[in-house]
Each structure stands twice: as structure tokens, then as C-alpha cells.
Image (cartoon, rainbow, N blue to C red):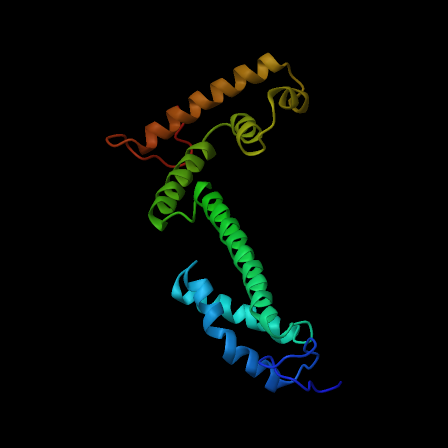
Length: 195
């Protein structure tokens, strides 16, 4: 590739060199103007970053950079595009931040509620294990398998009304067994504590 015969400060045709000396001349001459452009529009750290982006574009497109009076105008055009891109990025970031803040956080539970819930769960299971097998099965089908009553009725070979009644009775027996063995003041009984 041909080396440029002129630098930005002199007259002549558009710069066609990608040489480091040409870029250095461009950078040294126009850095303050571009940096000031951004300082009037954003914070100092952002201004430095955005100015650097403008000169990255100039480095990559050094052959397209006009010389003379047009150079600064070209750089301002690049700066305007960089600033617009930054505004769009910030707006997207703000929208994303607002969206994320609107999403309820459930996060992992603290160990204490998990331990308490597990202990209660174990007590319910212990009480259920002391029920008749038919009560245990209908409770499992409804609670654990989450089957609708019509499906339970087909599975057990009875009517939906019978399932409703059997499930209601099984829940009452479970509540009675649970309170009998886990309510303060009531004696704890072992297997076979049914009356």
C-alpha cells in the first residue's frame, strides 16, 4: 500500500495511508476536541472511553478519514454516532434493570424454614403411616400424584362421589391422628395407635 505523501496539516487529496505516523498525527491534533465534545455530554470516565472508541474507528478506517478542515467534521460525525450508540445502550440497560427489578425474587430459602417445614412434613408422614392402607392410598393419589377425583375414581373402580367421601374421611382421620400424637399434652404413641 502506498505511503501518504501528506499529513493532515497540509493540503492535498484525501489521506490514503494506514500508517502509524498518520494516525498519531490525527490523534495528537484532535484528541482534545473530541474529548471535550464528550465531556459536554457525559461524565469524565465515560468521555474518556467514548473518545477512545472514536479513535478506534479512525484507526480502522484511516484510509477513509479526510484531511484538512474536513477531518474534525468527520471525527465529530463518528463521535455523534458513538454517543447515539451509548445512549441506546444506556436506555436498553435501564429497561433491563427496570424489568429485573420488577421480577419478584424468591431466592433460596434460609435453612431454618426448610428445617421446620421438613420436621412438620415428617410428622405428617408418620401420622399418615398409621392410617389404614386404603386411607393412605387415596391420600397419596390426591396429594402426591395430584390426580383429579375423576381419575382416582377410574383407578379405584368407584364413583367420583365415593372418592370425594373417602378422601374427606381419610383427611379427617389424618388430622385426628396427627393432633393425637403431635399436639402438646397428648401422649405420643407408636405404630398401631388407632382406636
